[in-house]
Length: 389
Image (cartoon, rainbow, N blue to C red; front, side, top):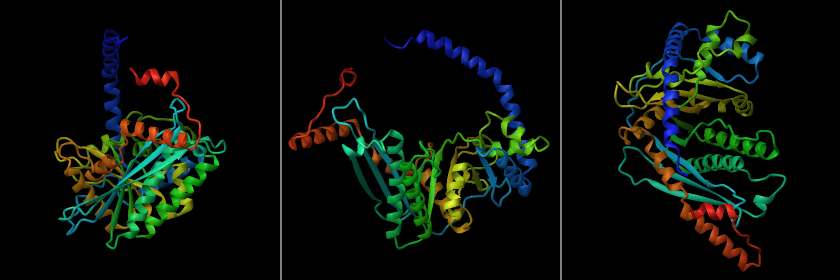
């Protein structure tokens, strides 16, 4: 049966009516957030202490902490004589599927190398890793979708560190899509601990090579700075009560900074307060995740916000911060009215695994297994019928 568009239309009207009724509350909260940012813009010590008190009351607290710039900082685009070398990585994967005739996984990582504004041909390469048989069926460390995603993140950063180490020029910017901080589950099993330790070691290696580790988040949905402002606003309340309240719920950081940053400007740099960020800092204080917002839009009347995650070691070196700021703007402006780093877009194109490629890999595996006398199963009936829709 097709989608029941008549039912959908009725639900759209109902949901939109509800959203219109909530707009007044949202506007009020947005105004409160903007006023709080102005009010506490210079009170960095108070804000840090407030977060410290809240974290002791709630170890799961996740928010922003000011580093050393006013909350309302707006840094204009740097004017560099030469843009730095940029290495971008993106990954694509095939997840294990028990309904296929052969259960396997593939991680394909694309690397794009470019020296912006230079008359040099960009470089590109891909590394492909196959997981099969014992890799899939290990009961002590099953290869779940989350583990595949974690391995993909690790591969991206590992390849970037390796390629950065081969470069003779400095600085080198290494860039991935998404945050540096990890959200993969499960976080407490032995395999996660092993892969997480490798991930931190790779970030440390990149830092020691005087290269920048950065993660680019397009159209971010986070409210880390908003959470900081909520803690500041409720300073007269008991800290345990404060950590449970969300008086500015629904307001996003990018909306606040869209009203503050002109095209090309970046915000202040903030430290991330979270249990995962603390594990980065415990391994190496220079790896503590930080971030700033960047208006990569080109029209004053329409901001386009990105959140850029960096390590604390980068955040505390103005020259590296300027280099990253400049190269991201240059890359985004190559993409016209839909700004996004060109190098990341190219890395994604290199890494992408198509459906046809998946089918070809499956055929190659089945052929090799049969040639060695190994049993090859059949697709599940469910998968067979789905493939023939």
